[in-house]
View 1 (cartoon, rainbow, N blue to C red):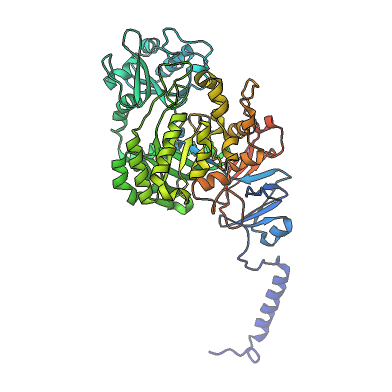
View 2: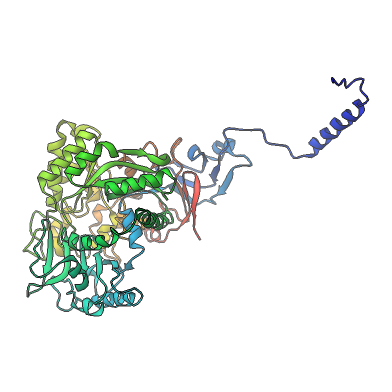
Length: 581
């Protein structure tokens, strides 16, 4: 039935109801009209270092749906702020982009946080004691793992040492019923006790594998130290244990390690990492985690494998921005030499303190060429670990031969570490478009033995020559190389601008970076080194909102204060993922 409000007996009641509702609406708080430009989060009253090429600054920034929608002063950001916006008053503190660690081993970092930390041990006896105590808590036959030891940093050499390396006997006697594997701080050597060597089938007649060395004592018996490729003898024995795990157990173990590594990075302001070498199997597992939103931060992963497997699998394993920008796989990692500490870096001339060797070449040059050709054919980035000056020379030669006319194109091939160079090779990086991905903390960590290994001339001319490389036109992509070093970007930033050792000595200060260069080496430059500068590395409009709030002005504080700077907030994709205490 049609209701006529003018004549109906109900009209007075209806009018009264509308009148009452009108009065009630006047009493209600005003409702904000629907808006589409409302920021989820805004930071105001800040000193924002945008980290563009001009190192511009701002005081406010707004984020919507994980992207930067406004950056400038308060008036620029104000139109994006509503009652629904989380507004953070920075109280004058410094804001930077999320840091990018351009060289670490992410899952290994997580694994290292589950192992004995031997990095602070001051003697071999201290290490033996730590391992023995760990054995009391584990069933017989369980592998005991540790990492971070370095014989050059002990206060006294161990008894019966060979070239400073300890003999396994004291450890084997203290821990006879558990196989033990202790990785060197450099990652280029490991130590095993008798139980581990027996499982690996290592004995006095075991020969050196290609690109590796089984160290032996004067009587010809294995010392317990395995350098470079010889480490695989022990790790293969250990892996036979993990091969018995189910796929679900492997996934759960990997996810735990990713979370441990992610937590360690986010609390340091690291929101993106370049993982320096994982298998095809690992990246397939990482893809599952990325697609289900389980990666704790952004990962750009380098595949490490031989040319045969690369040829078969490169075409099907390229991944970009999987999981909404959390996983990219478009790089290949190779290693041409070892590390300087264990005399594994491949040098043009013999070691000063061990003239019997010039280091180790860990991959055949022809195999490296095959890998480079595959990367060129499939448009993958190539990243080669090279530490010694001979190693860097050989890699640059291969790059030049393979790239040919593409030298001038935007291939962005890299050399990882590039620690020791001859003067004539320094300008070749910029000329060939090769990015030196260097970890500044290695300089101040290794400087205590660099002159011993290289001598004064080679150390002065080519050791960690950031300034020379930048002056020749290169950018430096910085990082920590964790877990080889601590995952602490402050140490690398401090080393970059001071080159100061813990003793106070400064290691060839003419090679220092400026503060701006150091910050760029952790933001915009590593973004470019991973083809991600349009998305990451600076706080510009439209880029992903990865942001760090610091309690210290990194651009102007005293150099020593860089080491104690704390992260107040880490923001990933516009969401707060870490709050400092």
